[in-house]
Image (cartoon, rainbow, N blue to C red):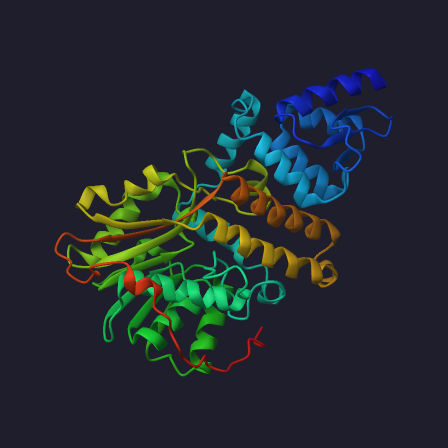
Length: 409
């Protein structure tokens, strides 16, 4: 390919991305974009990769960076920040990009079987991998930073306190948690709110670890960890908790999810949904769906509210913690980079580049407002358990955290 044609294609690609403050370059010397000496650069190693970026940039950038066919010179996060901010108002993707995204949604549908496959691909990569870069309790959801200086461990405990206060858990109540991760929130609710918890999850690795931790802390009589799909939850509960699971349900399944919530709390209970969302309904980045989060579908707030409408549930509180998630991801990426060689030894260098791009891209998405983090509190129309004001959310707690080790594999 002649360098003049490469230069023309680079200029088209740069304009399609919203003309970010980055430089695009080819080995031939063809360049486009920022002329600033300090601008981060994207070096595209071959003509085939350039052509694929023109046709389907979301997929091609992730694949090319992971394979080493795209190199970043300069700060990756700075580059992604610039691209995300400049592309916020760009036109809709081309028809072939939309067609590929639609095909992914069809292939990764969150049916009972599909959900188990999708969750297994992400959450069952091995507990040892996640222990390298998550906090000590293995919370893989947005933390809550009462001040920017607190540690990730402190911020994750603050998040658990925050959601418990929002639904005003009382000793002796029965709580159901849909999608419990490695069990930290369920154990936290039992220990500090005095409730009994039934926690559901379809990740085998996570359930085994959660049960082990419950035994370690002597809470196995307070918390039951159940390896099953949320659609199979039965029984009546005082509160319904879901933290970081709704984005794996899929909007097409919200009617069934809604029936489960109604079955659990009726018109006297209450609950909380904590989820990654959007300002408007649109598919998740196709490369993220393909390589990192199969079946992922962050809803808009309007889409999520349809869960409550059929049963006359009241939405009593909505909070957006978008910047808290950006901070959470910054902690994760820093710990991930410090453990990159160990990750490479577990998997390979391509895996390291994939997850580096996923974490850095997620930071840029939350910083730019492309992604949101919503917490929605809801209640049945006969519920009388919610606080009069929000004052209870900001009371200081003093307590002794339990001593334990997560050395279990």
